[in-house]
Image (cartoon, rainbow, N blue to C red; front, side, top):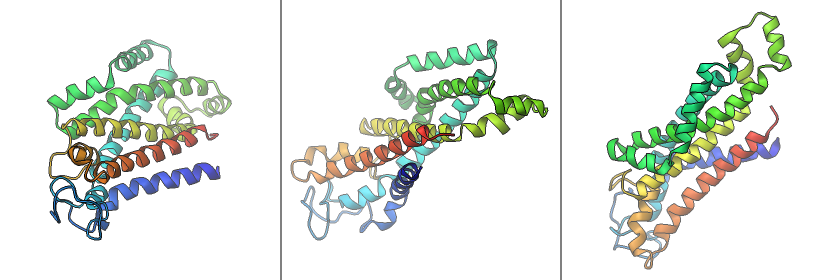
Length: 259
């Protein structure tokens, strides 16, 4: 329990740091403070990028939009997947089979290909949300469906039936709260998927547009000058790795915690 709480606190701290980091940037992310690709010094602790902007300031400000977009995508994917999983797991009729078939079709489609197709036809943020829903909600549906099938014949559900609870009331008041840890873990994992999609699209030029700071875009922009200032590529890559690893680790521990 203590280990899970610590991991969750660290994950929340990483997310908050990514969202609020721009407030502590020593320079404006778009401000040119020196020559391109200079090495770290007293003025720029991580050096400058290809346009002479402070790498540290851009790293501190570069996670906010990514995290907020990914968080919205994760919440929507988990919400839709949970609702579908509850419906599919509570009954064995046509509705359940149709939801399961739809989830299987979406899972069979290559997620990156879906994201690229959506990015061509939709704005970058909308494409991230839509791709996360298409690729992650079916996984949530499957997980919640199995958990609902296990719960529907359990003792506490039978007790609730004896009290007169039926249908949606029974699902919301009894079954859903028993999955709190599972759903919390699912939000974390869907967040990681959304970050991966957003980073991939930004690396390919479909996401944040210059001069907006973005970790994935920084890797693409600074790669040509990485021999002169490796920090321009390493710093945003480390920021992405720390964020995703922290959230994924906390989600894994939360998912294993007893209900």
